[in-house]
Length: 471
Ligand code: FAD
Ligand code: NAD
Image (tube, rainbow, N blue to C red; front, side):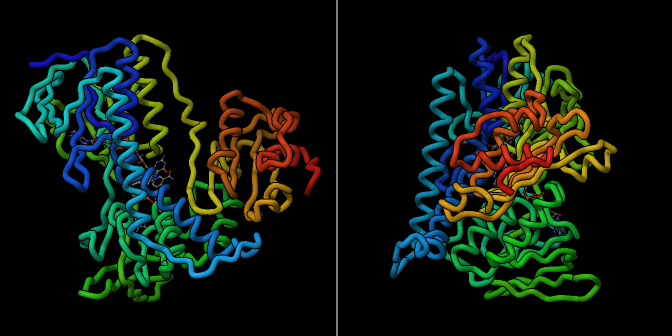
C-alpha cells in the first residue's frame, strides 16, 4: 500500500492548487481525479477547466467578437459584409483552450512531483483510500491527511430529465453545435445569464424563467436593476416570479408550463437549459463508511480550519458550499496546505470577488448598500457612470456604473460594485482596498491613469464624499 503525507481527492481548482502547495511545502502528495473528457481520456482541472469557467469564457469571448462585428464595427468605420459565424470552429477553439489548460495542470502537478491517480476515490477507513483506476488495477493508498476537494455537479429539478439533447445542463449548453431557434433557460443566475448571452449573441431567441421576484439578489440593487435593463435590451427575455410546473419533451420541442403571478403560462422552445444551482459531489466517496458529516443540503460540514467531523480529514472548494467559485476553492487549497505545514493560514471571506461575465460584466466584492442597511451598518455610497469616462467613449462602451459603499463615519470601504466593460479586472482594485482596510478617501487620493476605465473607481470614491469632478 502506497503511503502519503497528504492525499487530495479531486484535481479541480481547489484540489490541484492544494496538492501543488502541499508539495512545495515538502509533503509527499497524491492527487486522485476521476474526470474523463469527451474523448474518454482522464483530464485534470475539474469543473472549472473542463466544463465551467474556462469553456464558458472562451465562448463568451468568441461571441463578444461576433457582437462587436455585427453591432458596433460600423460605428468604428469598419464595414463588415457577409459575416459568417462558424459555430463548430468556435467550439473547436474552445475545446483547444480547455485541452491546453488541462494539460497545463497535469504538467504543473508533475513538475511539483505530485503522484496523480486517474480514478475514483472511496474511503475505506479514516486514512485509507481505495482508488478504482480508470486504466489500471485498483490501488489502496494510506494518507496522514486526506483532503476532499470533490467539487460539485448541476442541481436538477424534480421530474425533469436532463438528456443533453433537448433538455440540457450547463455542460450541454456549452456544447451545442448550432444556435437553437428558441432557447429556454430555467434560472436567471450566473450560468443562465452567461449561457443566455452566448446563445443570444449567436442568434437564439432566449427566454429565461426565474423563480425569484428579485433579479441577481446577491448584487447591489442599483447594479442589478441597471443590468436587468441592459441585458433586456440585448434581447434576453428574463421573466421573474415564474414557478415551473412541468416540462414535456417531444421530438421537435420542449414545452414548459409555469405560472406567473398566479396565471398559467406555456413556453415552447427548441432546447431548454436547467441552470438552477449546483450541489456537492460526494457520490462515490462513501463518506458514511468513516462518519464524515454532511449538512441538509449535502455539503460536507467543516470547522473554521476546514476539518470535517473526522480528524485529519479536510474539505475545501465547492463540496463545502459557500461561494461556489474557483478562486475561493484555490485560496482554501493554499491556506489548508499552509495550515498543514503549521504556517499561518487565513482567508478573508468578506473580500471574495464575484463576476458575472455578461457584457457589460457585473462584478462586486463585499457588502451591498442593502446588506448594510439590513445589518444596521450606517453607510454612504458613491456612484459614477461609465458614460462620464473619456476612455469608455473612446471604446464605444459606455453602459454601466461604479458604486462604492463605505462606512458612514470611518469611511472604510465595505463593498464595491461595478457594471461595465472589464468589470472583472477593475474589481481587483476594490479587493486590494478592502484587504488593506482602505477608506474611500484613500482611493480618492490615489492617482489613476488617464484615460482609463479605472478612473471610474477614483470618481466613485470622490462621489462618496460628494466631490466627483466629472459627473
Ligand atoms: P471541481 O472543479 O468540481 O473539481 C472537483 C474534482 O473532483 C473533479 O475533477 C471531479 O472529477 C473530482 N472528483 C469528484 N469525486 C471524486 C472521487 N470520488 N474520486 C476522484 N475524483 C473525484 N467559477 C468561477 O470562479 N468563475 C467562473 O467564471 C466560473 N464559471 C463557471 C461556469 C460554469 C458553466 C460552471 C458549471 C461553473 C463555473 N464556475 C466558475 C464555478 C467553478 O467551476 C467551481 O466553483 C470550481 O470548479 C470548484 O472547484 P473545486 O475544485 O471545488 O471542484
Ligand atoms: P445560481 O445559484 O447562480 O442561479 C440559479 C438561479 O436559479 C437562481 O436565481 C435561482 O433563484 C433560480 N432557480 C432555482 N430553482 C428554480 C426554479 N425551480 N425555477 C426557476 N428558477 C429557479 O446557480 P447557477 O447559475 O446554476 O450556477 C451555479 C454556480 O456555479 C453559481 O452559484 C456559481 O457559484 C458558479 N458559477 C460561477 C460563475 C462565475 O463566477 N462567473 C459562472 C457560472 C457558474
